[in-house]
Amino acid sequence: MKTQRLGTSDLEVSRLAYGCMRIARTWRRADLTPEKIDTGIAILEAAVDAGYTLFDHADIYGDTTCETIYGHALDRHPDWRDRLVVTTKCGIRFPNQPNPGDPGRYDFSPAHIRESVEASLARLKLDTLDLLQLHRPDYLADYRAVARTLIELREAGQVRYFGVSNFRPQLVENLQRLLPDDHLIVNQIEISLQRPDCLWDGCLDECQANQRTPLAWGPLAAGQLGTGYVPNGRDPDYAKTALRLRVLDEVAAEVGAERGEVALAWLLRHPAGIIPIVGSANPERIRQAVRADEIELSHTQWYRLMEGALGHRVP
Image 1 (cartoon, rainbow, N blue to C red):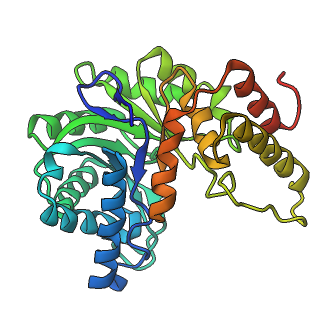
Image 2: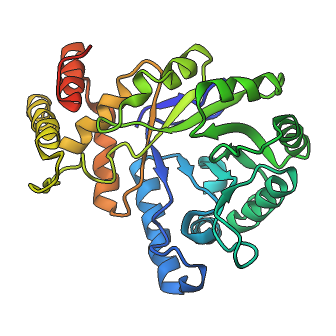
Image 3: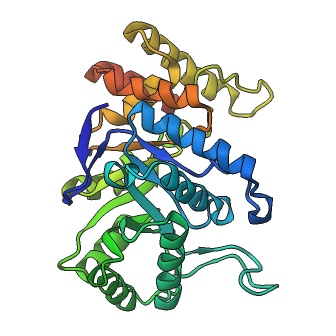
């Protein structure tokens, strides 16, 4: 797989990232078993063997169990520490945590950010995070305090680089102004042929203008753009979905590829340097996705796919 730089950093990573959200096969910490750990490690091994070098986590994935599994994987594969780039996210708190009755919420308080980083480092069995992302905007955040906290984490050697996730362009720029010596190198946002909003909501424009790498979560729309997906005929959006898939299949036939590979190649074609995050727990799908890096879509094919996704001509 080809590689690229993450933003303005010195981190060289694969053109596709592997998203670790499903490796635990559970969202309850109490359900993590030795068997689930072994299965999760096998999934990570499949991704490494396929050429992925960027691994995306969040402290909430699997209720912390996904980071725990990755830490066990490093025990078995200590060479991964030097070969792989690890990112995690913080800032989302589940309902009833830490106290019964607490609402689900976003929390960028300095204390929570520090506690999250320390806990993630312990679970991942790392001394330093390559990249920390703020997961979803906290509406009550004091971003001056947030910026000071991030700078302190870097100075303490706990985090090398920072990024954000699901941030609108203006908020990214506002936080960046408070971090003159620490460039926000990524914005992780939902981007796919099913959700192409980033093309006109300013997110990709901001990334491209400021050399910020867009990490695309949901690049296959939870499998709905994947090979073999059959839409529900009773779905009110059936006609639009069927058209999108028909055009995908037409272009896939032209380039000798599978539907899902073309959906990923559509993202890779964009000049902002989008890195799709592949989240399948199926080793064959993980390997198959890598083929997208070999597909060269023409300018015309890219716009045909966009037109099929929209269900009408481009404005």
